[in-house]
Length: 100
Length: 398
Image 1 (cartoon, rainbow over the protein chains, first blue to last red):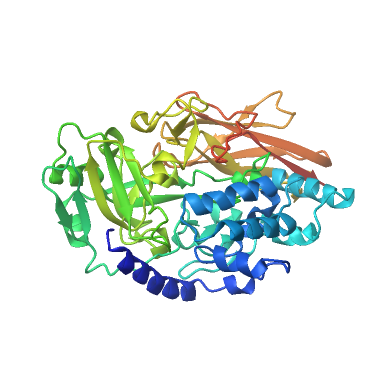
Image 2: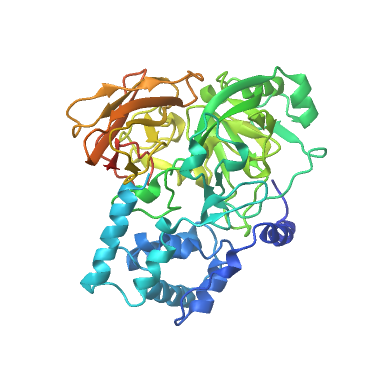
């Protein structure tokens, strides 16, 4: 599928809207309160529902989240700045790091 | 189904009491994989939700009991969240690439009427099936046993379509793209490749029907790739483009994802994609699943209890399934059900003697026609793939 970037982004947004309606339910999940919760939710939910976070929490420690955030930024192009990445890491490590 | 998960959850509970848990982590248990929320997607009966978007839903154990997994209970697995509904009248399958002699497009009508119709039964299992049962646990969708199913797939041979477009000498891989797209243009689109030999294998299909009905939207309508014996990552859904290439494909989903430590597992090698460190996952390993009982199930004393389940492998076919009730010292043959072909799963049944009250621990292992058996120990790998260790359940006889 080759489009110009602008067209692809526009098409993606339109279809996301349609898909989101069809697969409703994800808005029922609210992340735990804490510093940078809204930043975390906002950035992560661009591409995926937030249940990926508690779903992976039992597997994760701070290092795991650091690697995941790095992967999302470098491999998947997540629009997260360096200072934002630090805040998101602190939030996830404090609230969703359940690796025993 | 829940043996190791229950143990893991119990272990997780241990650190809550131990006082080493991070602040606020106590509520995790309700959100952990063990919670198994059942939810309905459009066109589907309730499935176990692992994630809403991209949608990842697995089949509950009861859905793996029928010989053919019903379409509305078949698992759903996506990497990318943009999943367009496709108009079959305007849909085209584009076949081209550097090693295609006559690039051309096909309509669904062209595929249905221009080629021999082929039907085969095959297990479709996600590479990461059972990742959530791994110990130590690894990141990724925390699947239980249900990221798999067995279906009858109908369509046309990929090799006939490729031949129509002309396979040039020097073709090494065939690349597949589907209509699903990433949200962000910077995210790698989900493209996969196959070695040319596997693409030209008579059992590799472009399917438009599943169990005699049109493919469900969430299982790849209007047409998807069927690669019997190989894990689900290659079974590209919503096919839109096929490229016959003269060089190895270097996309993210081949070069960086779905890879195993080189030499760690058996299975056919994907040599054009292999390096000294890692190699692509290819065939499924011989495996089995008890579908009649979950760990801890209560059974009535004195009754003959029938244990049942399924066994499958990467395409050799199942030779035998064995059951042990004495701590894996001795093994007895289970009765095998109908042979659905070497790519389908094989039902097994075994009558247990439940005369004595108390716990009855049962282990099951399958053996493939190529001699491979299920191992006792997990080969840990970063992707959480290929969990085919011998399954054990303990029944509560009383």
